[in-house]
Length: 446
Image (cartoon, rainbow, N blue to C red; front, side, top):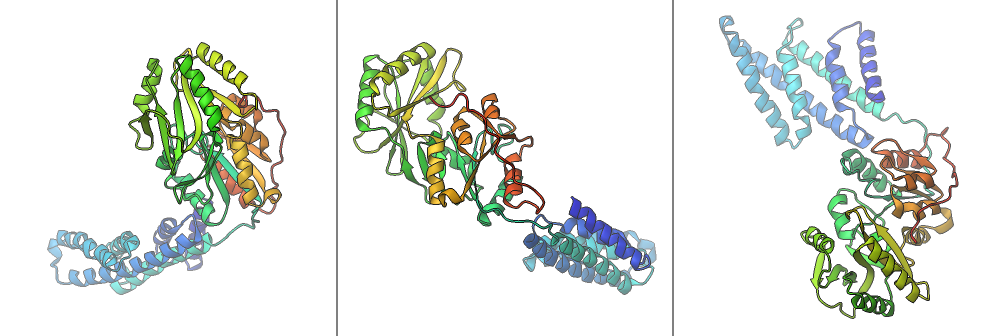
């Protein structure tokens, strides 16, 4: 907006320096239309608009020539011809494969044919074209102006997805998609850490061209979004899985086993024991990104986690018993009540290394280790360990109280994640880098 206002001011200044010759509305409109968020876009738009300007001016002169053959008493025919002339003026730009010039061709055509005729057709056409081209070139020059910035390539940015990059009501905004893709093309180190499965994430993040693997399923897996394959899994051991399943069967408790097999996520289940399990299955099985299999789990495949849908009382009992059999400290327990009614919860059992923090550190090693500084954006309990381990952490606008308590800073806008990355990656020379404000994480995974 500031650059647009500056371009308009320059156009008006040029009008004054020319002794108020012409009509500045055409140059200012052209400057506003041609202003783009990035220089490379402005060059393309400016070129297209100049082509449109010349096309519209030529068509306008042709229409003015036709007016000589129309009797003065049928003035309405002038306006019919002008209206019809818009069609070939725009069509010519389409034939030239410059569709971005179509609107400008029509605007200049109208400005030439509807002028007061003070200087004659040829002079009016020249003036309108000149004023429009001045506005186009002014917008291009203004857009090339950059405040002095320095690039900070030492940052590694990790953001949660739901509630962070993706708002509950807004989703991922077009602004965030556009700016983030520009940053990714420029080489910024950025990835997403989410509770979702990779396939579920693909459905909502397809417009963002991620270069790094994503941390999915609460940190249980690393997934390459480009090649659509699992790069790493923090899987439960076969022996421990058998012991847990045997115990749950003895207690007549149902469970879902999430297994990665040949780059596909399969969810094995048996006979349901309560209505909430049935509801979860009916709700989730319609998704094309989940593959439910009824029956026994094959020997091959990596068991990523076990999911139980239980009453709070049964969850307490099951967790306590399984903890007793976990003599090696292999397991990690996580409860979630966001999708269950009162008195029920989701109990997830992972390998102890299945955390966003662990996978974040693993990615950090591949990016240069100590040379990088981690900036984390989180919104819920699952992000706490990641945020606590980061050099700088931000709680998003929709963050839970636990995430706000751990974060160094809080974001206020719906595009706060991307705007903060922009500010940290390419700060102005006089801008200082935010410092870590250490807080004690509460409510981390048990």
